[in-house]
Image (cartoon, rainbow, N blue to C red; front, side):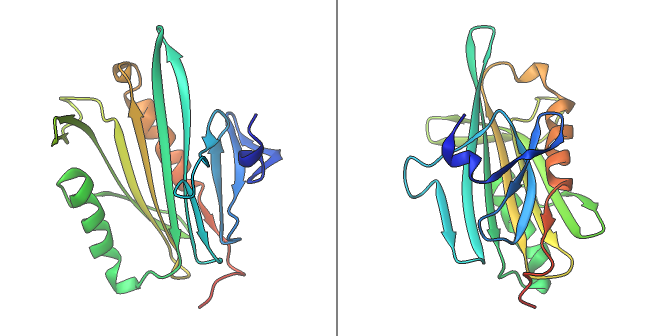
Length: 193
C-alpha cells in the first residue's frame, strides 16, 4: 500500500471490481485507477503537474505469471490547451508516432470523443517493429486520445504490457483499456472556457 498513490485515490469509493476512483490534483478530471497499480514518483519526471491545466503521471504493476514478471505500465498526460480544430491532427500524429498508422477506433460518450489503437511493438537493437494485425500477434501497447466535448481538455493515455504471457490476455486487455477510457470524467465547473 503506497502512501503517494493513496493521496490520489478515493479509497471509500471502489467504483468497480478492481478499480478505485482517481482524483487528479488539477481538479480537472477523475478516472478509474486499477487497484494493483502504484503511481511512480522516484524522480520528478514520473509525476509532473503545472497548475490546474497540465498533469502527467505513470503507474505500474508487476504480476507474477508462471514464475516470470509481467510488468504493466500506464502513462497519462492531461492538458487543457487543445484546439478543437487540431483534434484529428493530434490523434493522427500520436498514432503515427507510436504505431505507424493513423486510423483509430473511435467511441463517443455523452461527454467525450475517444480515439484508440493497439499493436504489438518490439525492438531488435535500435530498430522498432510494429505489428498492427491482431490476428498475427496479441497487442502489448494501447494508446488513446480522449477529448472532452465541452472544453479544451484532453488526455493521452497509454498502456504497455511487458512480459511473456501476452497470449493469455487477448481481448481482456482491450476490454479493460476501453473500460478505463470510458470512465474518464472531465469536471465541468473547472473549465476555463
